[in-house]
Length: 419
Image (cartoon, rainbow, N blue to C red; front, side, top):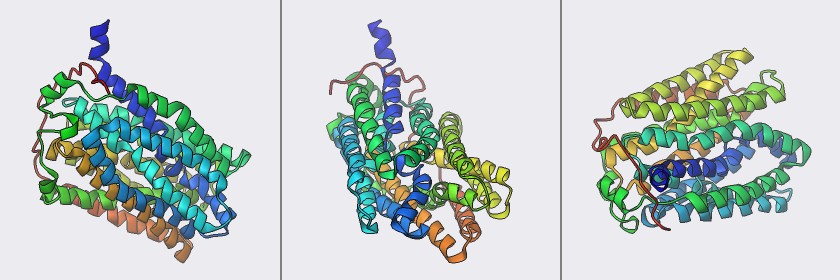
């Protein structure tokens, strides 16, 4: 029985990571922003562009913090980073109760949320999973991300109901309680680095000295493939965030009932889940850039349908297509970085790349909101982001061959190191 427990512990880490991501900052701050938006606009008597700027500030802070989170996970391991971030996120939920009627206070709140959100993001979890798995790394990353995908389905309608019954401030506080009582204990108990035998089989050094084999960060950031990925994920991140966060408003502006628009957010969340599992399975079998091109092209089709069609059913289908790409992108970032540059500085590289993705995710919704405020319609900004997705798709076709392929198809994780 003990041997079986050890054999399966890597998958227990995947499960704990899924729970942690399900109650991370993204489900309530990112995927539910479109649900909060009408209440916030009414509360602060501001346009959609001005309210969306709060999310921009959130992502600006996240982009700055992300490389630090990745570097800390490289040096100290994922568990302390995630525990600190979960504690901060839970406490920030209660801080929402103190927000007054001034828009600047909302901006400060969302900026502070950026620290908690990025500290509980896939950066630290993804680094840990990459250390546990090699041949099934894509599948493990995809299953890890199912927690975030499921939460993206469930959270928007729950948030809508909580706002209607209690208010948006109280909704943040309730979420903070869930983080402290559920996510924090799970990650504290189950998140573990692989033991010495597993690390030796992967060719890894002790956690405090970083991972090997792999390319040092001083070389990674200069490499052509890193810069191509950076540009592609930045552009695609702006586009999919803009569409996903404004999806309820895009639909309600076309006469769709509010509850159907909230359902469409859940449809987007379902697509995120499918994209994460699907991309994880496919990445273990197909060349990563080709997988990225496929998902980016589907998102581009979604933007086109949203821009040219007024049919609500087609709009919901388009939301699903955009969600597929949204779901696959974080998996793609972690997987591609590990295959092109190894594990030595994966945390730092992942942090920088994810930070760019988050920064773009703050700029995109702001531009979408401003585009609506200026034109009175989402059509023009949607066409602009369609072009952006096509550019990102073309960039992925420029990537070369893997530098760090699969060393071992049978991962067989054995046991956790004491932490």
